[in-house]
Every structure is written in C-alpha cells, then in structure tokens.
Length: 184
Image (cartoon, rainbow, N blue to C red; front, side):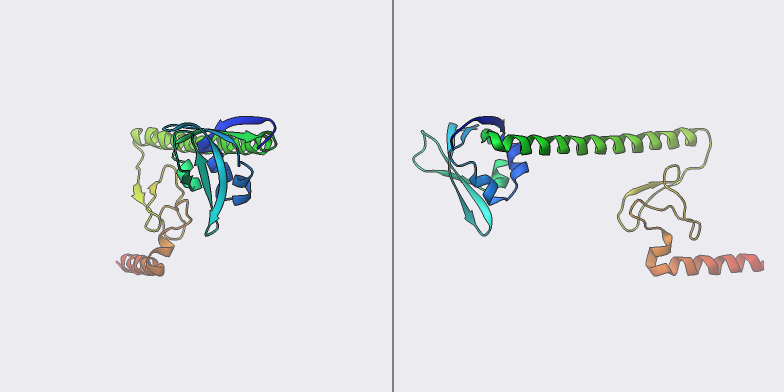
C-alpha cells in the first residue's frame, strides 16, 4: 500500500468493511497494531467460501496469522492504517452509526419518560395493568400502550393484541360471556 494513510480502530473498520472481500483487499500492505503481537502488516487478503481471510504478518512470527472479519471485531487488532481514499467513506459510515445510536438513545429515553409518567399516574391512584405480549413477550403497560377497542387488550409495539390470541378464540369466549351476563 502506498500513499497517505489514516489510523482507525480495527473493530470499527471490521464493522464497516463487513465481509466485503474487495474492500479488505484494498488494505494489503496496511500497517496494523495488534494487542498481542505489536506492529505488523496486512500481508494479503484471501477468500474462502465468499468470506475474506485477512493474513497478518509480524516480525516476531514465522507464519501469518489469519483472521476472518469477525475475528477482527474482537479487538485484537487495535488499529489499522487505512488508505486516505477509504477514510472519507469510513468517516461517513461512522457518523451514520453515531446518528443511529443517538436516535435509538432518544427512543429509549422517550420510553423511559413514558413509563415514569405511567408510574406517577399509578401512584395517584389510577389503575395500572402490566402484562406481557403473548406473541413477542415484550412488557406491556396500559399507561403507555394503547388498548384495543375490540378485545380490550393492550396493543403491543409488534401490533398484536387479544384479537390474534389463539386465532380469535379469546374474542368468541369473551362475547359469549358478555351475552350470558346480559341475560341475567
């Protein structure tokens, strides 16, 4: 590899490059820092069953150490000096990852605020129902999750409610019970 290079985290680059053999091949000759073996180079990038095999060479080793990309995600390769032309796409990817993480953190914070508001309402004496979705097992809370007007069950984020429970059998039983109560 010739020209300018930029040091980046080995873990982050492995996540960025994934299993793209062509992208890993552009790193042949790149300098790396390994946590156990020190400085070395990416000697070559091979391929086995469509997956890249990254051959790392070190002065202290007589043979190459070979990794698949998921092995590099373990953090053993602390840094990789990537070619400058890969730096911009890598930085853009990293910014997109950060934006996605921030968006997820906002969603979690919103959900936490909603749950705390539901708890506060419960403390005021309002009835609270806590349950678990029969389909995806996510927790349900009537202070946060809406109630289905048909079956009166809470509607999960996955979209299921009592209407789908046992293929609607629950609704038939409930309606029969209501008819019996109405006759009394």
